[in-house]
Image (cartoon, rainbow, N blue to C red):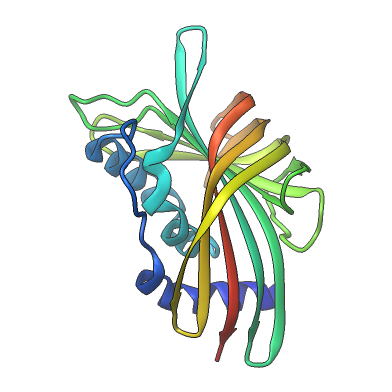
Length: 234
């Protein structure tokens, strides 16, 4: 776990040189909506150890999130898989991670989103992880998640998982796009992920305040991104 965390910290310094969304998507989400999602995540999770690097990897691509409709609710969902086979200071760093980012309730008037979901699990599809407060990326079956609510003034409240699950049944991708920088080779693949999540979470920092629950089924497929990382860091 510690080795992976150190790798992610070092990785953050070179990702900017490699990240490039590329291509044009006719269903791309408008810039103000993307900005609202980013503000919510930045405000709620900026102190999380893994989040800054994950954000750099994922943010250039979240404008491709799928609409997953259920009744009157339409949630945007994008799946993310990380495939890491690299070295740092001569030590091997091997990790497989899966994440689901989703949100709903965007207001063009206030340029805020009502709810943002960020679920993180160990491994790549198929994944069947239980959610809790702590995440061990090197231990299968363990995951965590956050729910974030953004007020009209852009202030946020966050809830951390106390229970629930992340399940991904399959993922498929097309040809990759490779970029290099800082001793690493990053290849991004676009495709789809199938699965579902459910989360029960308590507000942070004071978990006695409130408990929230949510669930989303994207078994018919949501757009997804796989990032393959190879190479070495000093």
